[in-house]
Length: 173
Picture: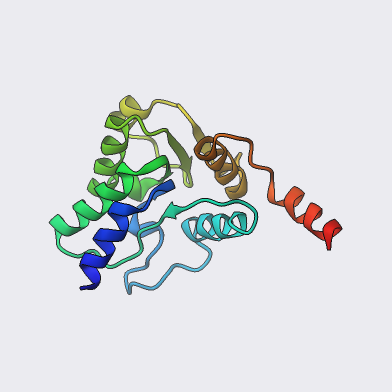
C-alpha cells in the first residue's frame, strides 16, 4: 500500500525542485546519514526557505525498492519538476541512477543546476550533456547560494538570501 501511495503522490504533485544526488554522498555503509553532509545541508536550507516561500521539492531518501518501481517513482517526480539540482561528486559521476536522472531531465528541457562538492573531474559524457551551464563549485558557492539560485529559476523571480529574510522577520516582530 505504501509503495502505491508514494507512486500516486509522485504522479500528482508538482515540484519546483528535484534533488539528484548519489546515495553514497548521503548514507554511509551502515545506511546511516553521514553527519554534516552537503546533501543534508541542501535539504536543511530548503526547509529554511520554506518558512518564507511557498514551493515543493523532491528529495528521495527511501530505501531503493525494485528497479522498476524506483525508476517509475523517480521518473514521475522529475517529469513534474521545474528545476533539477544535481549534487555533482565523484560518487554521483559514477552513479547509473544519477546519469539516468540527468538524461531524463535534459530530454524534458528541465534546467539543471550543478553543484560540485568535491574535486572529482567531470566525466566527458556528463560534460557533453551539461557543459558548464549553471555549474557551481562548493569552493566558491555556499549551499545557501546554490539553493537560492535554483529556487529563483524554479519560482521565476529573485529569491532573497536567508539573512535578508531573517533580518526583515526580526524587524517585523
